[in-house]
Image (cartoon, rainbow, N blue to C red; front, side):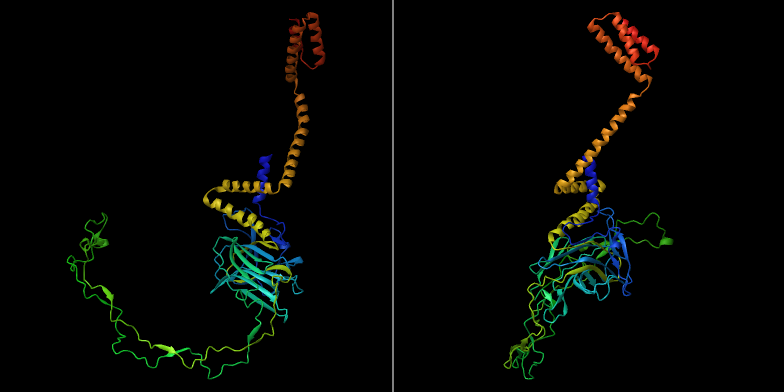
Length: 524
């Protein structure tokens, strides 16, 4: 029973994850994904989406994701939450897995957390659908980075502005590989990006050098009306008017010259070639000079060249002591230098200071909106939460579990190794969930005991109607018992006959031959 339960638990552990405790949203893209997601009906988005499995070897059998289905088309799909997710005071975590079935040359592979507003359309994603955070890889031309873009509303002007993370990491997009992308917006206004659970970038929403433009604008800005005076000198160095090129300065002198002190070695062979025909080589037996032409032995290095060298001897190159290069006039301080000019500063009319930019607008849904030249981009296990530990636990049960199982298969452990992995995973699950697992085990054991108890009387009744032979064997057993009892009690022939008659009355269906044997034994 325990063994069967372990196998069942292992199968359950190996199955794709369906839900995550503590997550505000989790999407494993199971077979009924279309009941939760809406493909855009907007005319700009003509691309299709495919429910597709991972590239083999699959670490989690039956696991599938949502894949971009067309090349050179715009794709959009979205899911709207029943209730908006408000990360105020807690922060926000978004995580998903990305599997590449083709080489991404130009396109995006990012998610958008949609802003909860009246602009969200239940008919699907549109080009003007507002988002709060855009996160994920983008590659095309000179761009190859993991975007993190925060749309922030100015409390001073009410305008929305995109704040781009400056030090964006490089994505991992190898064909056939799956990678985990995680973005954590902390309640301390930090932004942490992880790839495969490894921290790549940590920035602050309050630091002006971490985002462009800064989340909080500067207090002062350049005065647009201030102009540099025409007589302003901002050249710090000028050519020395008294400097002149020396008469012996030869700009044409080469950097290297032949070494005048070098001499040809005595063992040098000037008349010997560097290569000679191989003296040990022979023409193939099937070589036909008429058809193949005259056979020539392959060339090999000339052994006479080994001591010093062969052929024309040339002097080695050495540095030219007369080389000076191009003459450049010396620089001196500019006596007219005023300094570097900069416009005067004025108060920034758009200035504000948001002390808690991590309190982003409530999230109303998740969208994938891409324009890509390649298909085969597969999304899976999208998670939105407010606690990073929830994302870590989900990653252990999805990304890490699949990666470990796939590694076992690639090493050649086969399905036996994968089964061992999932049995260990089931054991760990049992330890972490002792109460529900114990209840399940007891229920299974109780079912087996009940089944056995119900089947036992039926088997006994079936055995009791075994026919004449069974009765004969039972009668013989009873005869032996009677014989032993007669010997111990010392009873005579009369008692034995009475016992025989009583035995025949108890077994009316027994054969006459059996009765005679009983009587004879009792008489003896």
